[in-house]
Image (cartoon, helix red, strand yellow):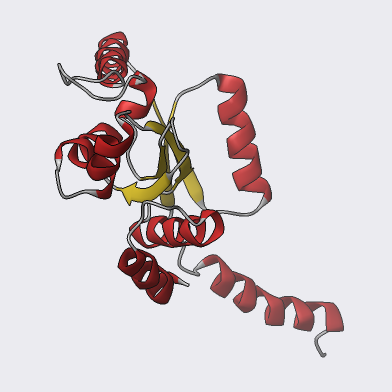
Length: 191
């Protein structure tokens, strides 16, 4: 009496299946997201499951006190968007508190231009130009007897790109009030 083929294949497959069942479970990763709505959270879970991602979704509910505290912080930020200096030389409050900018100063009488950049709030740099007797802006103001108008040409939060944008605009616009050594240094460094 012998074994039939069905019994033989059954015994061969069984140990393999038991081995697969003993395989270590994949470690689960937890993703913490704010609770928005049941519908959105179920869609996120569905996407994770469809893509066979082993991720557990942890939803964090936001309490009313947390929401109100953050709203107060945001309201304080909006107050800071206005110039805090008592005697600011700039007329435009929106320009005052902008930082990480390339700016242009232009004489309203003869249209002479100056291009610069600053990482600080713009009004601080502007006031330095106006008050420093050695600056090209201050010396030009004595000649034309007019305060320059200011405008923002470009913005970037990365210092190296900000300097590059400044050099590009100096090359393109050829401002009269920038000193020649400033121009050649900017162009040799960043262009």
